[in-house]
Amino acid sequence: MTSTTLHPLEAIDRKLTSGLIVSCQPVDRGPMDNDDTVVRLAKAALAGGAEGLRIEGAARLARVRHALPDVPIVGIVKRDLPGSPVRITPLVEDVHALADAGADIIAVDGTNRARPTPVITLIAEIRRLGKIAMGDCSCLRDAEEVYAAGAAIVGTTLSGYTGGPVPADPDFAFLHALCARFPRVMAEGRFNTPSHCAEARKIGAWAVTVGTAITRTEVVTEWFASAMWPHEQSPVPEYPPGSSEPFDVST
Image 1 (cartoon, rainbow, N blue to C red):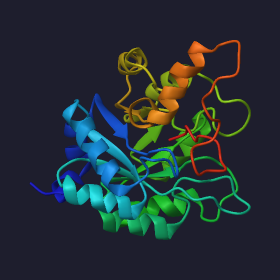
Image 2: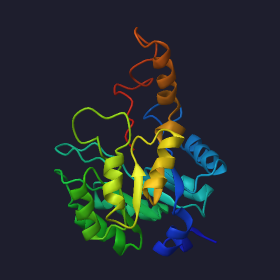
Image 3: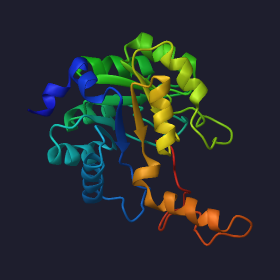
C-alpha cells in the first residue's frame, strides 16, 4: 500500500473515524525542534495507538512521509504575516508545498479574519490537487462557511485562540454544535487529557487531535512544575531556550 491509496475520503474515513491524531509540533526553537525528533515522535505516537498525525511544515512533512508512507497525515504550514492574524496555511503556495510533500489532509485557518488569500480559494485548490480540505474553526459560522466551500472536515481547533484569554479546557459546547450539523468534526484544541478525548468521542467527534499534552515536553513539564509552586514564583522559564516568544500551545 502507498500513501496515495489514503487520499479518497472513504479511505480516510475507514482509517480515522473515532481515531486519535497526534500533532507532532515541538516548541518552536526548543531542543526537540528538529526533523529527526519529529519523525521519532511520530513513530512513538503510532506505537501508542495513534491512527494519524498532524505535521507542520512541508519539508518536515516530507521527512515524516518518507519514514511512514502509509499513515494519514494532516499537513499545515504556520506563518507570521504582516497585517494578518491568520497563521495556519494562509497561502496557495503552502497548499502546493504540502500536497507535494505527501499530506492526505490539508488544514487551513477557517476564520473570517483579514488574510492574504480567501479561504474559499485555498479550499478549492486543495480539492483541485486531489487532497482533503479541513477548516480549523473558531465558531459555528466559520464551520458553515468552510463546509459550504468544500471542506470535508471541520475542526474546533481555533476556538479560544482568536482573541481574549485562552480557556483552560476544550470547547465542548462548540464541539456539540458542530457534531449536530456536520459529518466529520475534528475535536482539537486543549484536548489535554484522556478524559477529554473520551468525552469528545462520546459527543460524536469524527476524530480527536492531541498535540501539546503528548509532544511538547517543555509545556507539560511546566504544568507539573507550576502545580508544585502554586503560590510562589515557579523556576520554570517563561520562554523556550533561545526564543524571545512564549510557548505557543495552539495547534
